[in-house]
Length: 258
Length: 257
Image (cartoon, rainbow over all chains, first blue to last red; front, side, top):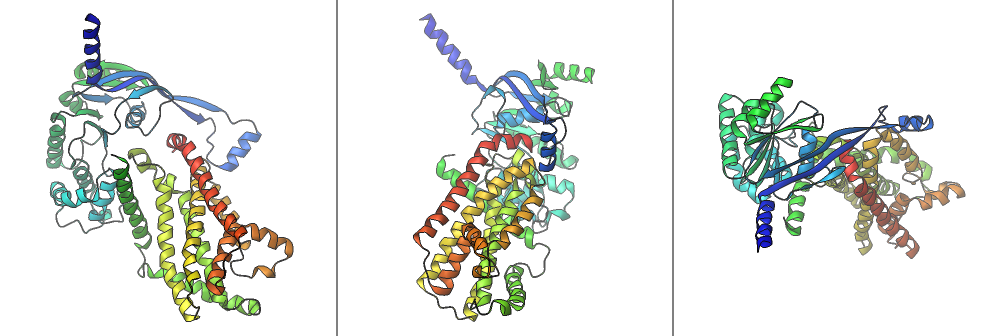
């Protein structure tokens, strides 16, 4: 009886965890001399100089994310944040360790992935939309709404190269956030686009997504964003997990070190 | 997403990516797509003017002979050259999207196939001008084109992986291509070369396809069963090799780019 109850409890706990990162390490082989061409490769091989240095982008990282948590990931540039995101989203396989997550539920939100500046804004909506996984029917249906949210009525026939950077990010944001909120959402530096007015609007949209019960991972350099919106923060430095816990505490220590 | 939805979604993505490639290519030219038709016609005019006197006895309908070879050759080089740089050019997309890596070389290959489609207009015009009769064999043309395409795609996969590691493959390949072209009997009759050279040329897959096309279009002949087997082996073999290497290297490519 007791055993059974324990089992059920254990199972429940397992179900709560939507992302389980277990002892993940990622090593990149970096050639000591930069071998970018066949010529150099042959020369280096002949000289027997073709040494590799192992670069640990991630070093034995473990943590769990439960359903409904909003987790902020901080760390200086090159600390391994994006490598970690790539491993979670399934673009990279870790050298060691495992990540347990339902990849179909993960949605990486990036702005303007694959925007082509030679094409018109309308063509880019379809191109970018297709790349991030919208079907043609869905885009046909939501097209008007995307234009409206981006506040680009009357500009859609223009080539994107004539747009200001604010307009480009508005369009990117509108396309990326049009979908129904996925169960696991990864936001990679998307909260600082456009002017004040649009920033507020976009922040509201993200809040909406956060509060709809999705599990969210936010990568941001803005401590404000992390402290305001996250329930938990993870600090990664030089591939190592430095600290994890209450956003305020983690951000405080991060600031002090910096 | 289940299998069918995936196929549908990826073909939508492929269509969007291909249309981007095509639009980009013609974005800055006034005549746009017309160039794809004019280009083979103009090069045919020049080459015919230069060589037709030389080969007049051995080749009848020299312009058709030349054009059959050159449009296939440019599709082959178009597919392989553009697929080669596909991964490096689409670095950002590769990292940030969840698309299968294969889609990038494939996009380039299909774009080149579309361009080939435009140049077929030129080919059709010339076939009509020279009053080449249409027989049922003419439709075999498309079978051979599929063969060349699959062969080129396989080689394109292979080159795209190599290019991620070695940037100078591009230069080496262009030199290899010029040698390869001279061994493909694009603008001269194979009989004009020494016996030893002929032996090499006859083993060249591109020559195999081009020769079969010329025979079916100009003379309504079928290839021998030996030639069929070799053509199928070349395209299936090259595709499988390229595809296999690509699949094996996928994770390493992601680390490298």
